[in-house]
Length: 105
Length: 378
Figure 1 (spheres, rainbow over the protein chains, first blue to last red):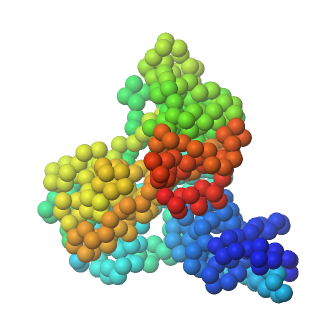
Figure 2 (figure 1 turned 180 degrees about the vertical axis):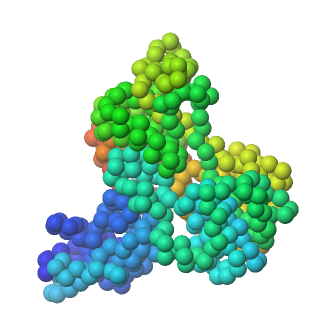
Figure 3 (figure 1 turned 90 degrees about the vertical axis):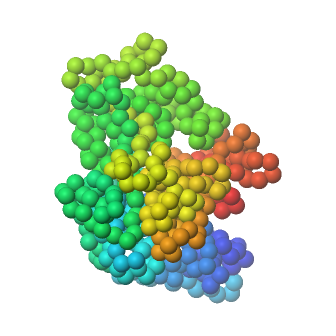
């Protein structure tokens, strides 16, 4: 588990990129907090720079939309899913379990 | 509607097919195209640099294509459209109740270079493969004609591959009609920073060389040595096959704001469509990836409804990767340009274009997050 930030530091509609060997970002959507691989599966772009709406993040470059719950894209140009990670909120702090990567079939 | 024929199988045609199935069309779907569906934007960027392969460019996986449950006629061009249906170059005629015209555009060529080897255009995968082979001959002098986005991307890639690169642009300021003179000047500066010569405001007069190009002659009398030339001088909508179809054609297939022709059973999408743009109050041919991607849903909804019930009114958006930077533009350029984030000198900034009190456009270099938020505000 790594500490991402406090809940107050991540308002709804915002995302935070966590530095690591593989960049992972935590997103605050209306349904709660989600963590995904930060790099769009289509081309080199950071999903943390994207647009969060409902339960999706839209890539800032080509507008591929990924489901924050599953990492699965629902439109072109992305064809492949991005991986998701468990998120835990405890005592007002957001933690991401970057070790427990959930690969998508 | 029992049968729909989609003519053109690039992004717009594929998206139209996906939209047809997504909206419940369960009839016969016929896909006619010279090439399988692949993504063109990387051709002038990562494909030239060898970072992605032809396989990587596929717009859809085999499963996705199979799910369309379509009848494919690939590698054949449509020759004409008439009362009997669409006739292919192999003589087959396919009759349908609905037609999607998505034949795209073909790269403009320079007549003076028609018989010369070593002069390339870049539109198709084959073009890109041929250009890549030409560049693989070792470091040489490359001249790129046209400093639009494709020209700039190709110039950037050629320089990264170790070639000596000169870009020739007829207009004094590259891209001025698209992003305005101020931002065009900024983009012109990217070439020099990337160690590429830009000669702007000078048209090309001709070429030197007997059977292979050896140089490019400029209108001011200069001759620029060239082992290889890439002409990035725009594209012409592929409408020749519609001669005699009765469809109105004028720099593209004329369609209404819902991408529907005068015949409600025929829609046109992507580079080939010149649609009535409600945002700009005139007809527009939007030659960008995003337009092809977004028009399909609108057009197909109208085709299935039998009339125009929904309109395409999205702001234009395009991006470009060149010299290690990411450029993004949305909306329209006006004379009232303001830098709202970063600074031009560092080449990392956001500029907004205004019309009175309203935001008309956004241009950004290496600033995707603020760009995305402003684009949403258009």
